Every structure is written in C-alpha cells, then in structure tokens.
Image (cartoon, rainbow, N blue to C red):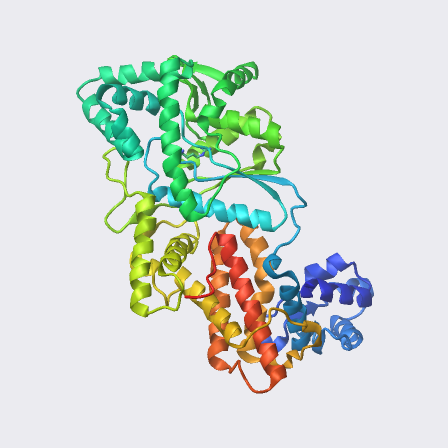
Length: 568
Ligand code: ARG
C-alpha cells in the first residue's frame, strides 16, 4: 500500500524543487473536508522562490493537477488543496489488504532490533488475581504490536519467586502445612498458610525472626529450603499456566527474581566499586536525595538482597544477554517510585542505556464490591473471573439463539475475548471498575460487538458464495467510492499507522478504539447499502470491501490477543 502523504510529498517535491522530507513535513490535513483531504501551504517557499505564496500555490496546483492520485486540485490563497481520487484510494488500500491477508498492517519499522517486553510477572504461591490481568493482557498486546512493526521481541515473565515472603511461606508450611492439601489446591492452600502466618505473627514476633532466618538459608542455598521453595514454584506455575492457556499467552522466558540470586553479589560489588553504596543502620543503600527520592535499599542489615537489587541485576543481565534496543516493563503505577529509583541507580552506575528501560505503567482495576489484598485473603482469582465470563457468555449465547457449531467454543472465544477487550479499551493509566454488564454488552464498544461484526461480515461472504480471492486490479471500485463505503475504506487505510502509533505510545487502547471504529463503519455500510445486488460488478466491489473489513478486524483482534470467530 502506498502511503498517500508520502506519495504527495514526492510529487510536490519534484515540481517545487524541494527535498521530499521537507515537503512531507509541510503537508497538512485540513480541518474541513471542503478544503481537501490534504493541503500544502506555500508560505515557507516564498523566500527561496522569491515569489508571493499564492502565486507559488497556483503554480504547484497547475503542475500536479494531472496526476492520477487526484480527483481535484485547487489553489486557495497560499494553499494547494488536494482531493484524492476516491477510486484510486480504494484500489491502493484494498489491493494491499487482499495481497497481504493476515499480514496486512505489519510493517518494518524496527528492522529486527531486539525489544524485551516483561509482563504478567505474578508472585509464586500467591494468587494470580484480577489485579494481574492488566500487566498480562496489556503486556501481551504490546509484545504483539512490537512484533508487528518489525522488532524481534523477547517475552519475559519476571516471576516473583524470591524474597523474604518465601521465608514466611516455608515457615508457615512447616508449622501448619500438609503436603496433600497443597497438592490438591496449591495456591489457595499456600495463601491460607500465608494469611495465618500474618495473623499469628501479630502476637508472636518469633515467627518473623524464624522467617528471616529461613529466607537467609534459602538465599545461601540450603538444600531443604531450596527443595520446598522449588516445589512451591512448580505447583504455582502449573496454576499460572492454566490461566495463560485460557488467554492464549506464552513467554520466551520465565526467569524470575530467583534467577538473579547468584548474579547479585557481583552487582553489589560493582555498586561499591563505583562508590555508590552507603551504610545506613547496617543496611546498604544508594542515596537518591539529590533527585528527591527515598534511598534505594540494596541489602538489608542481615545481608539479604532486595527486590530492587534483583531488578538492577536483571537489567544488566538482559543488556548483556540480549543487547536490547528497549526493555519494556509492564508494571502497575503503584511501583512508579521503585522504577524511578532503580533506573536512576543504573544511570549513576554509568549505564547510558538506562534510558532504554521503560516503565509502562497502568492504573488499578477494582471490582464493584471493593479491591483485593493478599494479606487478608479476600482476593478474586483471575481464573474464576475468566470462567465466569465463559459461563455468562454461554447464557447470553443460548438466550440469543446465536448461530454457532459449538456453544462451548464460542463462549470461550467471546467470554475471554470480552475480558481482554475491556482491559485494553481504556487508556492504561486510568483506574477502572470491572463491571460485567459493560464487559459483555453485545451492543456497546465491546469485544462481543466487534467479534459479532466480524462474524456478520463472514456470513455475508459465505452467503455470496465467496470464492476466496479477488482480482482487485480488474475491478470497478467506483461503486464503493462514496458514502459509508468510502468512510470504511478510510478507516481500513489508517490501520497500519494506528498500529505504529499504538506501539510507539505503548498504548493498545489506541488500536482497540480503532477496531471499534472499523466495526462501526462496517455496520453503517452494511445498513446503508445492499451488498448482494444484481449488478455483478457492484456486488463484487462491495464483497471486496466486506472482505477487507473482516480481514482488518481479524488482524486487529489478533494483535490484542483475541480470536475472530466466523460464526456467532
Ligand atoms: N511480581 C511483582 C508483583 O506482582 C511484579 C514484578 C514487576 N517487574 C519487575 N521487574 N519489578 O507485584
């Protein structure tokens, strides 16, 4: 697909004796469509050409008018106003959709450079709760977006599989635990031990002491502690994997915090050598007061390492291992300070690439009946939410008498898709309240609505006995060069640039909103026009557009991590 703006820049540059780049920077999109699809202001050229801007505009308009790209070129004062030939525009866009199919929208901006996307990263032996859905789903979409614009992406699940809480967990397990019970329902059981630990530790401070010692043993590699910890990790991963399977999400690496335990002494030594460490009440810190931040706590007084130390070690390891162009961390905004602190520490260590570490943060999700916390055990498991979404969808699907071969399959695709879509609908930084009616509303700006639109387009093609291919170049696209058909083509044309924009902003919602726009534009076209008309040429043109809309929606949903069912 030719980029129209670049094409115009090329034509104008040739005629006005400008560099293409310069011309490109000057082209505007007029605020009113009566002034054309694109406009070129000539003020800047006046000096160079020693001519009044309106004369230059008249001159350029005259020269480019004959190009097939334009339906009409006008000069109004200092402006050249250009109206794109609609059949040309339709041809340019739809030919590309047909030629590229599932690849439509993909582009090579990244040139194969490596980007790390770290996301999901739940904590072992703790619930994979609804709060984690955001990092998981947003991170997966960011991975797919970067993959689509030509980067090589490494997906890392930085599991929270290390730290003092494991001292507590092991202590609790030894005191009150039971192996069989854990095996049956690992996370819920381990969580109950953890909750009990906190309750009992309020009256019994020796518990905390024991937990600290246990963690120190784990960190020093004591066999028994390591064995229990490994087992907790495996059991937890099994549960997490169930959820990842439901969401269709995979990772290239599960190297979590524990992976860096043996890499930390070298990092601590490096911090010391670079004169960054200070002692404070037995602990080792990096003072960040100059940057108005609390100190970064590198080791505790008992010598054990901390979350932040592991993040520093992980970043250095990743730079060495992957030589990343960017390392993207999809983590809640509650951790803003944490990230600012350790990015600063990397900077102070002299790593200029610390600027390539990017914290992609997001707001809180809560349920209508309040938020959740691990300590008091009132949590909502993500798996339960997904299962509920599937059940509720099955009810709706049955009620509606939806056209499908398998209600079970459709309910999964639509129910889970609905949760993903909802998650990616709002700007990520916004807090939001999870509400079932919004998520599953088939008529709102929702996943089910978009999937339903896709299925509708599929059924139009099926009813027309669509053969699976179009010879676009030989088709007459004047039938779809106006009204709502043309509005739909404009949305489809924008798809690749929306993908690039969403990736650059780390903001999947930019794409989500665009998919809704395409779906709405298709539905308007569907209502305004008869598609299966007598006139064969006209019918083919309209089917082509139906096909392109369907393909674009499908590709968009795929980038969000969703499926596009043909029947619904
Ligand atoms: N495990 C942490 C949590 O659940 C998130 C980890 C975020 N990633 C990082 N590199 N610190 O809150």
